[in-house]
Image (tube, rainbow, N blue to C red; front, top):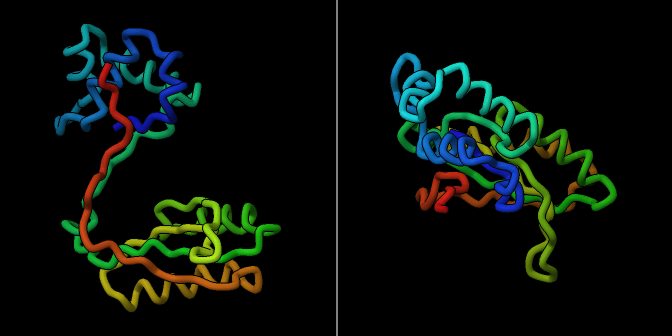
Length: 169
């Protein structure tokens, strides 16, 4: 399903693009040719659907089209948001390196909230065991090296929301 950037980018959508985002934001139909089915519903061909989505990706209106898995249903019950206190002089470069690790599903920088929250780099990992999380945390720590001054792992206990931005207009 398309994941949109922000409400500001919605102004660059024409009505057909808006209808296409609305038709796909809840997920793609589980059929052999989803683009054709969506196109049929919108009065266009599957190729036109693909072309419009490709154009929105190229313009940055949507970031990606991908599956949104339920990690718990897949057996990944140890989902840890790792939080790191990384030297600000190195956090951007190191954050990019951590985000490129194949087991990190998302990684971002956030402001510290001192004195209680010293962490400025966040990286999510999904594992089947606590030991796997510990191994991956060690790998991230290895990437961060001496620039890392502290860390914690916050484990998910349940999924509250698993969707991107939704158009309601």
